[in-house]
Image (tube, rainbow, N blue to C red; front, side, top):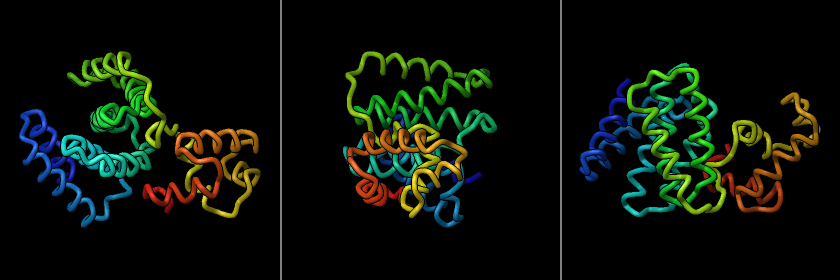
Length: 211
């Protein structure tokens, strides 16, 4: 797929410290994803992760946060079915999170990567890179939790928060108890830095996760 090829070429340029070319290729990957209406597909998670890495180098924190939020929305689609793409994407997300001092977010995506590696361990140098990033994370300061630290269960809850459904009704749709839904919602509020459902909805809209 062209969009993946462009994103991977951007990563190669990053490795070679050619950040200008990396930025050009990342933008081309995003343009192809938009033109092909691929923004709801797993390949776009890598595109957003790569764009986040470029933004880190440029010092554009709002852009990093925006791209991480867009990738986070797609994270439930990242599975062992496409293991190399999945782990590579999660690695780049982890690196971007760590650059923002979002240790909680980095831990979530690295845990996701390690779960995939337990099922599909033969992925070249990726397992080593995951462990190297985990070692860096272990020596980093705690930082604050953010949107990237949302769990898969919490991400499934996000689309239902802006609705008029009560927690009990949401629980019926997700086959969860009202208590579990409320617990997950409170955790989401904390990670978004808000204290209510209304504030969470507003914050999600600002992050591009509200629709």
